[in-house]
Length: 539
Image (cartoon, rainbow, N blue to C red; front, side, top):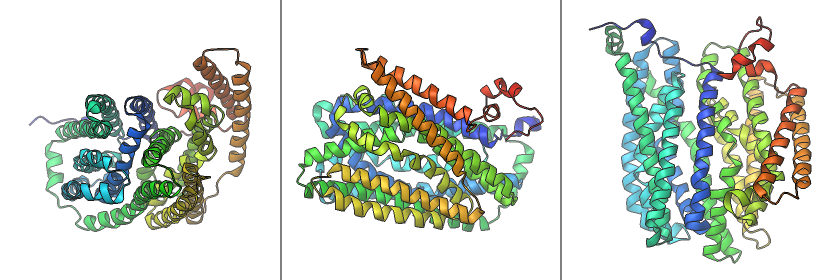
């Protein structure tokens, strides 16, 4: 057998910033590509069809959470520790046990969802047309179960490229299949068209899984050496299963709170709108507009926060193992600054330019009021994922669970209380979602502050608010000044460009972002290295 050199055997391990930027690039590409079906699907099946599609989705999230839940986090954390301790046999054991667990659960819940679909769609949901969508999403449970394990495995090795590549492939396949299947089934009725869209999502997940399996097989072939076979023959630490469950169960419980909250939110919103006297078809269309059009737009910048959350887990776990408090604080500072600075311009744009934005994307200006109401509080959502990931990485999933449960309880109560009143309607749900995001973010922040004796930089937040106000003023003035331009998209993008330039000038002027920060960014960082003192340590 030919021996491979140690260099070929070594998997490339990215730094925290590199890993985050790889996932961020994939996240941005996915969010941009993901808006193709978000924009095109309502034009094919309408807001009511999107509502049917969205009503079934919360049930899928609950089942997927029960199956995978904390598995990706647990796998990433344990694999990271195994790689740090040079115990690859432990990594293989964690991967094997996790696959057996998730595949078994996936098959069971897929069968249950198909069996119970008639009862769920007729008795729990307010629109029986969701039945076909419900059936279409059931096979996705097994696919997501397997994908989640492999994603956690690669993330634990701090190799974010496979996850990023598979997510892009999944998004591309989903775009084509979702629109194609919805269009093909539209002549059979709106319920079948919505089911076709869900089948497209399932197909996308399948192609993403194939990409992960291909990368894993490629890595295994590179590692097939006598030395690696010796590693495989060593027995793994059997206490790993207990650790796997100790991490998985509370994290799954925490995620279940969010998933059940989303499920109950869809049920309570529909029931409350019915109590308010709103017809079923109108309520379905309003819910579809909120969950299928407005919420995805608000969450567009969360591509960065999601990337930061994924990269934080192995990075903080490794630092915590070494009891390196300085690195933990430094990573938190980098994370929150990145999440806030990148999310702030989107918040301003969605508030100031809500009407032209909804007109350009969805050809529907009536829903702009929902966007304008949610936009000012979007920053709380952007920092929430990294905050929760921090608590989980530092073995405090129970605290994250409590915080999420408290916010979800308040949200569901407010949805029922407000949305059942005709003067609020669907806007009652928006108020509840906003208050929930504020409560959970503050509770997570308080928990981290107490756990790590960490102090959030309030002066930086004040600088950010000033930059946002300046951008809002400049964007508003530019948009109104260009009122004579009769091509709306030119007016919109001109105002957006000028506003973003004003924001960037401000954040560099007040040193929220510096050339040294840009020096750490992969690819473009080399352009800024000459501007910084080479004696300064890199991140």
